[in-house]
Length: 318
Image: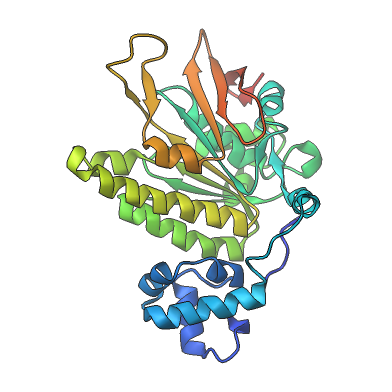
């Protein structure tokens, strides 16, 4: 297996921390020393059932061992970014639009109306991440959090056969969990850390990100609570992708803008919280036949642009 992520110390390396506390930290998803170092005291205290003073002490110890918080030069940042991997989508035009494919250590959001092929992209990436690097993959596993019962093994097998992967082996390298509500969805992201330690996971998919939040938090009086939970959920995903050098892909629904007199009267659900936390945002819309127009509307370093893809029996293609 090829894995560019550096080997990191674990919480068992913390001086003076007993086995019971180590197990408690691991049970809360803080086995990795870096994960503990970047945690907030309140979050750690809540998840690991510790006093806030104890949580702060553990975080301080982890920061010293992990050497967190120092400045580095732009050249050092450039060198560190050499570990970033890219997963091809099956469409050369779309990969070029994305600067070479879907990046690891970043959140890529696909949003669009029903039938715009958000789930097709999610399935295709789950297959392509398993391919060798010289074929646009990372020779790695995928993790799929399914909130709307959209994961289809038969579609994975079709796509895998089209790129000469063994369909049954391809299914074995995708770790799927069904989320039944927003709390369960957030819990699964915490549990995902354990899967990432046991398997070479380099792709984490949430399909879809906002469905449960949208259904459970109805009305303006619940908006603040919903956004707060979404914010925490997105940052948990961001941290998970960074720690394991994995690409995080989320699909998102759209809502109508009744006051829009010009242009496309749709907007992504989740507002500024989702928009600001996503590294790349791709708007998908239907065109004639099986074509879909993919518009990159936000990126830290790439210009806005469009690519047209075909959704075929074999998967996403030019």
